[in-house]
Length: 210
Length: 43
Image (cartoon, rainbow over all chains, first blue to last red; front, side, top):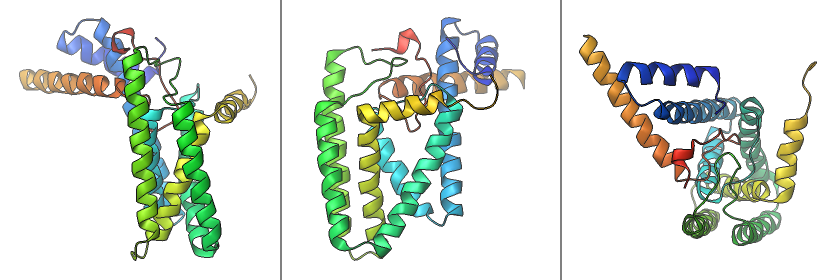
C-alpha cells in the first residue's frame, strides 16, 4: 500500500503504542490520509471562497457535491496534490459563477441551465452511477445497486432543493439555487467519460523537470 | 499519566477504525483523490 509519509508514520505510532495487529496499520494509514486530505481541501476551498466573497455559495457547492459523490462516485486524480488544486479551485469558482449568473443572467437562461443539469444528472446517474475507482472498487453487486438507488435519491433531493429555492423569497435563494445546479453539472461531468479524460489530462501535466 | 495517554490513543484508534468502515461504505468523500483502500475494507 502506498500512502503518504505522514499517514504511515502516524499509523505506525498508533499501532505500536496501542499494541494493535499490524494489518490494522494500513487501515489507520488509509483513514488518516483520507481525513487529512479531505479536511485540508475543504478548509482551503472555504478560505478561497471567503476571499472571493462567495463563502455561502462555496458551502452549498461543497455540500451538494459531497452528498452526490458519496453515493455516485466519479473520476479521481492519481495525485493528492493535483486533486487538492482541482477541489480548491473548482468549488469557489462554481460559487463565483453562480453569484454572477444569479445577478446578471436572464431567468430563462438559468431555467435552461437547471433543465440541462437535471437531464445530465438523471442520465449519468441512471447510466453510470456508481462510478468506483480502481483504488476502492465496489465489489458486491448488492452494494452497487444500493449505491445507484441512493445516488438517484440524492440527485432528486438536490434537484428538489434547487427548484424550491428558485421559488423562495429568501434573499440568497437564487444564488444558492444556481450553486446547486452548477454542482450537479460538475458531478455529472465527473461521472462521465470526458470527466475521466479531464482528470487523466490533469494527472499527465508535467510540472518542472522530471 | 502514561495510562491515560494510552487510553486516549486507544479511543483515537477506535474512532479512526470506525470512520474507516464508514468511509468504506461510500464511493468517495469530497475530493478527487482516492488512496488505495486496504483489502479488508473492500466490499
